[in-house]
Length: 220
Image (tube, rainbow, N blue to C red; front, side):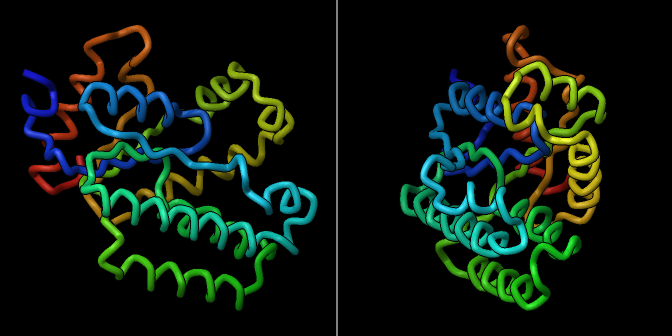
C-alpha cells in the first residue's frame, strides 16, 4: 500500500510548506511529493523583471515586486485548482502578504496607499473560486542559531552577504505570523525533530501527522 492511501491523504490535496529561509522547505516539498506521488509547485524567480531593481532601490520597487509575486502565485493557485490538486507547494501566498509586504509597510519602504492597494487585491483574490486554500500548511520552525547555521552552510552568495539582523527580524516576523494564521489547518514541525536526508522513515512519520491534521481540522 502506498503512503497516500495508507494514511488516507486525499488525492486532490494541496499541502503548502511555509517557513523562513534555511529551514528546508524545498527538501520537504520534494520528499513529500515523491512519497505521496504528488506534483510540486516551486516559486519561479528566474524571470522576475523587478528583483534586481528592487535590491538596488527598495522604496521605488517594493510595491512592483510584491504585485509581481502576488500575480505569479495566484496564477499558480489557479493552475493547481484546474489540475485538480495533488500538489506540494513550496512557500505560500500568505507569506507574501503577511510577512514580506507587511515588513515593507512597517519599515516605510512601501507607502501606506500602496500597501492598502496590495492587501485589497490579495483579499479579492482569495475570495475567488480559483483560489484553493491548502488542506494543511506545514510550518517548519527552529531556533534562530540553527537556522542561520544552515544558511551559512549552504553558501548562497546573496544570503552570505545578508546581515544577521535581517535573519533575526525574519525569524521574529514568521513566529508572529504563524501564531495568528487561521486560513487553513496548521502542522508545526521543528527542524530538530526529523532528518529527511538521513532517516528514510522520517517522511512517513510526517505524512501520518499530515493525515491527523487534515482529518481533525485542528492545529497540531
